[in-house]
Image 1 (cartoon, one colour):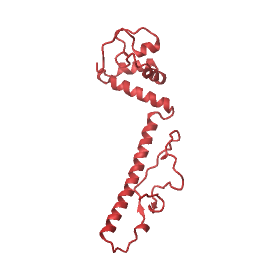
Image 2 (cartoon, one colour):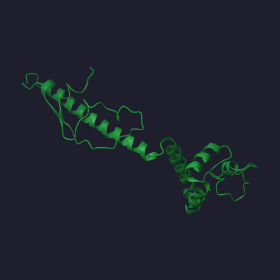
Image 3 (cartoon, one colour):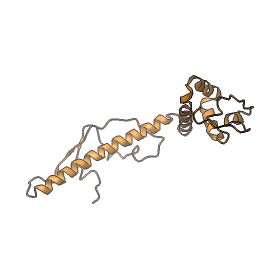
Image 4 (tube, helix red, strand yellow):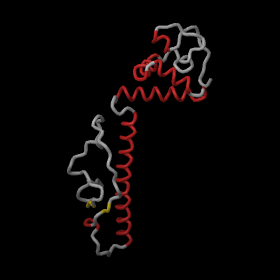
Length: 175
């Protein structure tokens, strides 16, 4: 068994939590060591000991450790956010990634215009009055449970999907 360590005389965390005698072939023992009572308590609170044992029996032995780690992560996420669980955290990270890609596109365009202006100093185009065409910006659901500045942007700075913006006026730029 991957991650299996010979047991001492003490019970595994699951048997301690459930207040039962730990048998030699306990399904929980290799994955919930005796010092991981909080880990099992979270998994038990969200999934229940019976469901976890059924899941572990169904999963091939070489994948059980990963399964237990996934259950522990999902249980912790569910306890923090009962509605979305780990999906809420994933959606928040995806939203941040899209917003950062959006900011990167603006920065690259700005850099390209500065480079073009530096090579042609007698150019008649005014850089500060040119508009940036933004890449598509997908709509996401709001993450009201997370304290995050990305999810709570002010209405004056929010952009629609196909809007062009004068990035030197509406978006703060620090030199």
